[in-house]
Image (tube, rainbow, N blue to C red; front, top):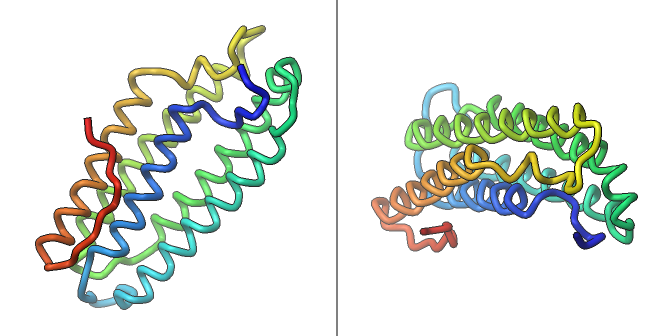
Length: 178
């Protein structure tokens, strides 16, 4: 295992996919609903939330840089705990947004997909924290359930691309496709 690992590769891919999906949601939707943010404000807020998560994740990665395998094993629970905190903050802020009517269903799907991912991430973190020892501290994160959560996020990304196409918006979200 390299010293530059910060979160498991599968979790990195899933987090990146969530960010792409949210970016796509921001680019894809149009209109405003009663009591909701105006569309432009909504997309601006999504972009800000995405930037905050990327920044916090980058800070966590920087803390992991240069750690030996032993140091990484010792510090993985704390580093991944920090990532969980960042994911929770992102999810809480995301859930508080009031999307415009045209984005409401997709927004709900994004929130639900993210909730599922965060729940599984936290379960894996609990396994890591409770283990007496693990040869690979990231093993609890390499599960079929976490991959399935990532697949769901991928589908939300594809749905955002379709919504964009349906509204005459040309966007390439680089959604993961199997």
